[in-house]
Length: 170
Image 1 (spheres, rainbow, N blue to C red):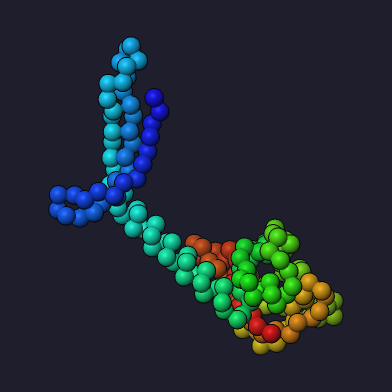
Image 2: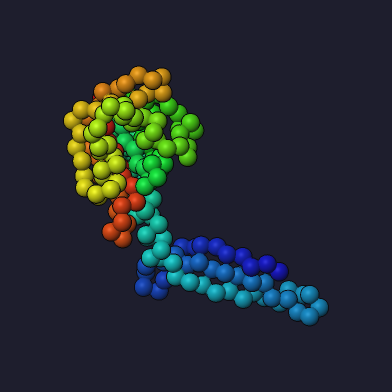
């Protein structure tokens, strides 16, 4: 007496395969005897195609970010870590669980009290302009100042800066 849903691939009369989302409801008589089914099908071929393209894109993204020799991380406008590749963790000595929900900027990129320079990450979040930083320091988990150079690019949604992506190497 429950609705069943399944996705099936069928060959149509034109010789094309199509994906169909079938919703099937059993029908019963007043005496609770099974008398048949009511089925409705919806062509979801376009949706399946988009899902496959998205999966392929995600796979390629993962393959690239897993092997690249630069540390890459993404933060939102509140400096919360949204993504980091394995080299980020390798270079800075953290594991993923330690940084979940943390203000990554305060952990790895600190300026001394006597440093009057404007933080490049802050500048990107404020101005939305890409920045190249040839020389700076990130602090590792063990407190070592790691010399780095990096590029920061803004992430914009509807003309609003919502975060940034940083690629760095030592």
